[in-house]
Amino acid sequence: MRKVCVVGVGSTAYGKNKESNREMLTRASLDALEDAGVDPKEVDGAFFGNAFAVTERQGHIGPLVMSALGIPDAPSTTVEAACASAGAAFREAWVNVASGLHDVFLAGGTEKVSTIDTLTATGYFAYGSDYVFEGGNGCSFPGLYAAMATAHMHEHGTTSEDLAEIAVKNHKHAVDNPKAHLQKAVTVEDVLGSMEVASPLHFYDCCPFSDGATAVVLCSEEVAKKLTDTPVYVQGAGRAGSVAALHDRESFTSIPATKRAAAEALKMAGKTVQDIDLFEVHDCFTIAEAIATEDLGLFKPGTGAKQAREGVTYRDGKVPVNPSGGLKAKGHPVGATGTGQIVEAVLQLRGEAGKRQVDGAETVLTHNVGATGGSCAVHIFGRSVA
Ligand SMILES: CC(C)(COP(=O)(O)OP(=O)(O)OC[C@H]1O[C@@H](n2cnc3c(N)ncnc32)[C@H](O)[C@@H]1OP(=O)(O)O)[C@@H](O)C(=O)NCCC(=O)NCCS
Image (cartoon, rainbow, N blue to C red; front, top):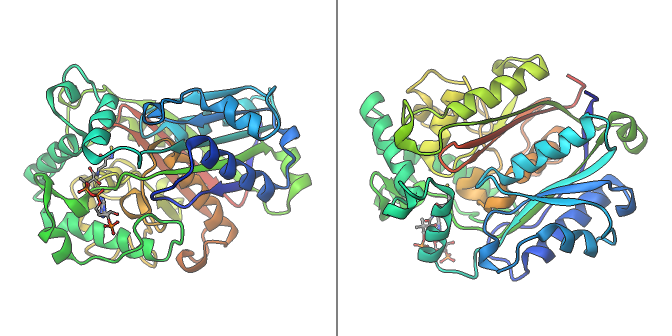
């Protein structure tokens, strides 16, 4: 496999956006190409995440974007892996470049949900569960993650206050992110006093429904060296799956796909998780961040939910987790989230993350989960080859 670099990044602001998926994703792609100094005509193809084309009745988003970029002949593929769609799209683009088949690829994603109300969005999102057993019987994603939170509380003594501390941290981080959906600090009291969405999860334990698009330009090391003196290397790429239905898993408090995808990415990078300087993990609900940090091996099983309370996972803590604000507060435009995490990783590694910069960041891990863990993509990025 060849070494692959990320040389350009682009992202719309997250939140409500008047533009369509095709407009948002074209804008993010153009920004990424301009950032890379790459002419669209040099792009060999693209993989784009988009999970809920039904909201606009417009699937097959790739050719629309490629046409708008002036390269309708270049191949594009829409990748659907629920909330991990863009992480999975990035992995496919990486395979195309690492294998030597192509030199320059776009990866990105888009989601547009502000056209529908919360009830309709919750119903559509449940299509990403095992619909026969879960969504079809009224089990929404807040409900499924609430079951995981209940199990974590039962097994490990985790409390609602512990989870609230994670929301407080990620909201605080998002205040410094001009592209975040929710640039608003909250307190533990705000979280615990907010309405219960699915017990024990409160309103502020949940990510919002966001619009947004993100894109990155990948290329071979050879091409990257012609474009920049400071390329960001893809040091490791891991993908894995788990049994789709939560009730068919051995445990509600661990996602096997996270462990397997992380092991693959770390092995490729020749690193342990302790070598990583900061983490952008999939915190669609506060409990998801706790479980992710345990499955990644950052903290012992059962202790992930205690770390924000102790200050460990704050931007200036020992193990910074979600300095962008995470899905919780930066927002979660499902089909765009995975490459959005990668945009943050690249900005951090280039020292361009502004007020949310983690000092001395040399290595970043991104972790993107589809549904309750049926899909997972983990990538490791660094300022050096490995
Ligand atoms: C939590 C939730 C139920 C709130 O929905 P809602 O009550 O209909 O909220 P609204 O969309 O009417 O928004 C009301 C306000 O709260 C804010 N808001 C919405 N969701 C929020 C959230 N999760 N956290 C903090 N603020 C939120 C909105 O920005 C809006 O603020 P404004 O009045 O200043 O504009 C909804 O966001 C939700 O279901 N989230 C989970 C999404 C999900 O399951 N994603 C898939 C994960 S696997």
